[in-house]
Length: 66
Image 1: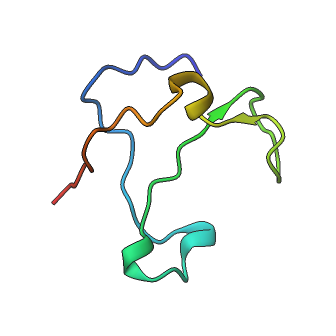
Image 2: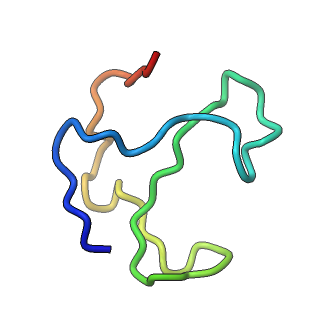
């Protein structure tokens, strides 16, 4: 909470953690959500998809980190 994020800042990596541990490699992804509560628990409550703010994915091309 309160962290300032600038364009070009690294937000995370794709990979196989949590619920994604058993996914095939072609489904690696970065989970990205905005929280409206500090500790929302399980389920979707207290979370908002960033698409609700951006209205479309702000990425025009895939971002690949070597």
